Length: 426
Image (tube, rainbow, N blue to C red; front, side, top):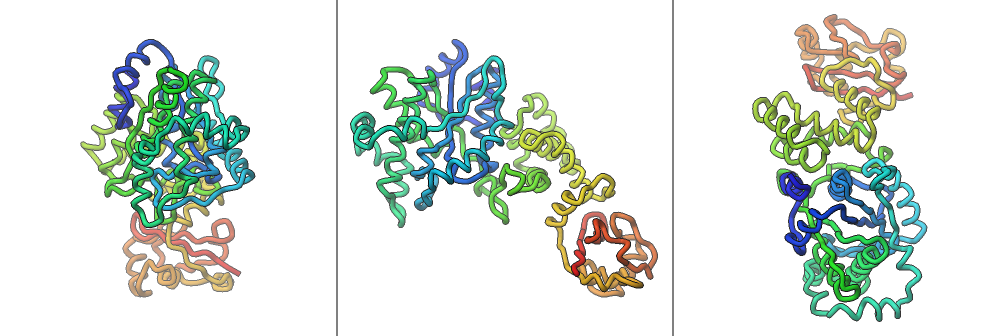
């Protein structure tokens, strides 16, 4: 199976400016390709994984990937996929963001390969020195107003209530010039991007043809969505970030563990580097026994290891096991704090636990695991209550300071998976 065949099987191919010619070119040997992103924040999010991992797939097949940071275009803002104008960032903000993101990119791409190392470039390096008049003369003259207005990203914004500024209208010229520069300086023949980038990609191939007289291609992959058709990578708390300071490794792992059953096969294809045979085996296991969640665990394990490393993934798996009835052995305070953020948590004055302590029945009512002390007693008698993962059968059990985890928490469980945390405050 060729690389393009694999991309189609994974659902990572949408369109190409000239598929037949690109197929023939790839058959002749390695190609240099790039994908860009604007460092509008100090972290990539899971929505960035598809383009960066697609570059990785090309790299694994022997091609030469370039990831382009938009130090220049990030100051303008791409209108594609946006309903309103972006906030403009300063050069200092963009430089800071890029320094943070570079660490994440080095996990997703191999920058140390002896044969075809990935490269990171910044379009500010060749854009900033060019004057406005030179840009209009050397780039702008090759684009008709009609073709620029016909781009979907522009037309959609023109029809919106907010409209589009001249600044964002010019974005496609900057991206086209990026492709031309890379074609000339680094022999880059292919640009990849999401379907919303089609207009920018074709602008680049047209500019290369007109100014350099050379071949170049643009290829897109589909927008990744959830089962209900909404945008992938969003939760109630916002975007799922690759920076563990913004989205903990545990929450990152849980995001993929909680993938809808109908989407787990699709996400295994798109977000992991597993082989086709391995993925199809997992899909078969999922079809035969969805409750075992083998496919979900493989998805979360593979992508968490890729983004955060094997050790961090193992910690996240350990915390996940805790939520399914596992013990506390090996759980660090930081990891436990991540778990606390995932379950209902209530505060209790420390004085309540001093001396003789507080009856467990009262604590269960306080935590919301029982509607009354009478029901709490029945739950204890039935063997359905655990304190710090240990089943309690003594109705008169009191909870004191000595039961605190990390000097601050009490972990309660009702049944197999209904948790609550009591956090002790001064």
